[in-house]
Length: 523
Ligand code: ADP
Ligand code: MG
Image 1 (cartoon, protein in one colour):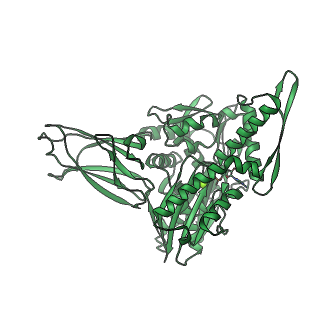
Image 2: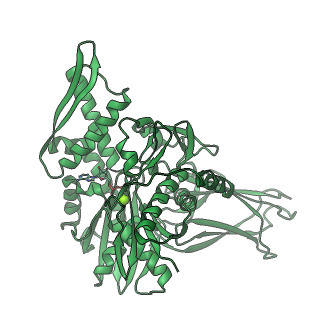
Image 3: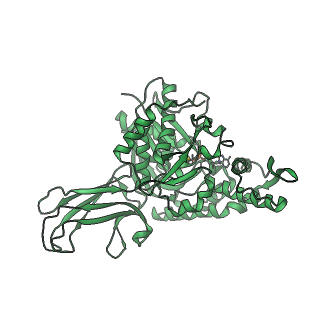
């Protein structure tokens, strides 16, 4: 049997690992990099580029360079998060046939699963090159707070990449697996994961080789990109004040600004002050203008403190959902590049009353955990058992627009819950059910997973038919629905329309289209 790779498909960077000779190793690409930018581009001469190659040409080809597409996956084109952040994306976002967000590069529209598939395919290639053997199986991680649509879309991406996705696991849980391998003693840990685009917090109980997630919370639209954006806005304002020029409409200038902002942010993790220098950033009648600005750590902290506070609200909720207090947590593990910002570390230290654990590499720990899980699934090794939870409550919309929760958040998965439905009219032959995920009492405020129609109901007076609908959440956190007629025990026909994900046909079509597209290797 071939080996299973673990892939951390990050918003900003992706990383692949494998268990080799009993030990997890992070796989470098031929250039020696252990992570690759989660970027895709179509160059001016029509070449498809991925990873570092895509990143290197981003400034001169901003419109056709796709980054942070994970922020869009499984999301509706008209979602409020997207509306708030749309100016962040230099590439064009379009509406898919299902109302889903799609991405345009060089006049071609891609589904977000296809873009993620292209990045996964690159990670697969990196692993195959290193191991010298073909790879077909993978464990892929997602933010713990991803809903069903986002998980399904990620699974579709795996298929598009030519991978059998053995399991989707949560990023903080993967990090805890890596940590748990080296720390066998019983303890409670919190994993605080702040990456480029998403924030997750999980509380876990580690005991006797069982890694049990107690609770999880987070925000799938909050991360380092938002820090960068605050800095960019600050620079735009300062430049406008000093020079009377608005750089907002200049794509190339904006892309340079964004890069400079991120670099300044990273510098300020170890320095107290840094300089942003962008010569020839603009031109007007009087000639070339240069941008020269000093940024202090203090200013940065003022710009982003509310974002950090927002993460701490989720932390509070997560600890309380676990039925614990901050002082019950023995160790805090930091994951994600953005946790290198001192303000983030200070907020975490203050809340838990202890400094975070420093033993794991925040960039690699998730991929390593995915590889460990892949090995557990295939080696028959029962050394570690993983029990995860569903991050969001699952339920249905009632007639009056309320949300009736059937499986509450933080329930251990897999889980199955049955609910009985009946008709409200005589001889009614079909019943429509809307399935949602979220925490609001108001159905419309939650995320619509799909609509299910129970049909072919035998003629009967209203209220008499009893149709049992079972809602399953599997170990991937993915929802499945089935229905049966209680009286006859017969499987009830059910039409499932999951909004915003690809159909089997669409996936096949994308695979066929991509089969012959040349792809330069990354280095
Ligand atoms: P993802 O999981 O989303 O791919 P990563 O864990 O790779 O993200 O984190 C990427 C984010 O971390 C980016 O926003 C990046 O700017 C930020 N980051 C990386 N290094 C540092 C640093 N030294 N200081 C502050 N932020 C950093
Ligand atoms: Mg990450």
